[in-house]
Length: 219
Length: 271
Ligand SMILES: [Fe+2]
Image (tube, each protein chain N blue to C red):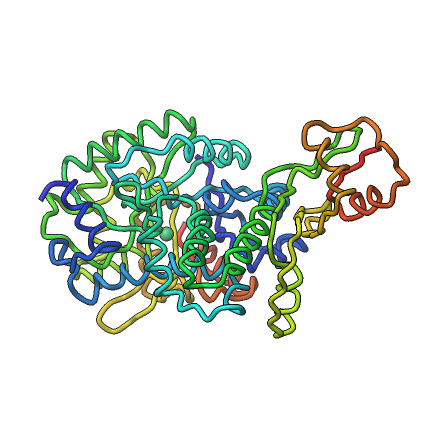
């Protein structure tokens, strides 16, 4: 057996359908590896999507098997392995196997993680900036409210189109804000370039976006 | 290379202890991948630690034994972390963690053959060159022994060291666990390694399942592992930067501090 064959047999055993005979792993010891590998795969989904379970009774072991067969675990970053999970849920929603809002909850949980761990730094020059950690979600359901309610163990499905903005503020806390037309009008130009001065520092929407840390105003 | 004393692996449950105080450990090892891809809180905690402690970057995803090429994005990101932390050396494992770009996120024992020696040595030479920082190779624990190996593990390590000049991160618990699981003499194994290259030692707890010892990093260092550590230090006749690894069921920081003290006392009593 050459190196290539050896490595392939491990792969076939760990994530394929090989019984492990070729690597002498068809026993209790080989199983230690299989359990560890799948434990990592399941664990990363479980950790990334703690809220999904409140809305759907997933068996992560089964879900992980199906998901990672469709979307092979090709990243060295364990967290990134779950980034295509919303696509998987959308696929299921399109097949009418799972409700569509699960897809949006998963999108929300990933956005939250990405914002929280973003490498983007707060700008320190003078001016008005869009918080560089911001992510925008165009949703059909009021996911933020649904998650909030689920924390009190009440499940409420609220259909309400909304544009949600998530950002990490100066203190490292996550902030969520539903954007209305006025807020969008203020934010869109900032996406292209910061402003030296605010258009109207006394505008209520501007003040709110600054207070929530979505807009950063360094005077 | 200056020895750092006795440190611990940084774990999430201890972040608060390092943010609010100065736990009694000499240095910290960070899992490189946890800091390469995450900013925000992770970056803040790392910055805070760097003010007070030396930090060593310890990776798990180089996948040296894999025929997949080294990932240039990974190397770039690792280099920035090494530069940021001023890690005097960095380490990863003698294993493979991916094949055909599928990542297993676990340390799988590679085939000990001349093709592997060449492959791993070429990769180590490349990364040492790129990182401009010495590299230390860690021996892993393994549960399955292939019938297709061409050489023993010490021979395998000897050949790689000869071709690369790399350092060794000797995991004493892994040697102990393997010696039980594969029925060999742990001290004889250690004696047959290129000991001059040992730059760091790992100590950790394991779990006795009865038929097999499992390297869980979830308990106190076993007394027999402490004994093997003492014997190793007697062989080395010099202090070596030592690290306590505790990854599962992580206890309060004071328990880790007491394990650090124990290692320091052993080092002090021998040297
Ligand atoms: Fe180790």
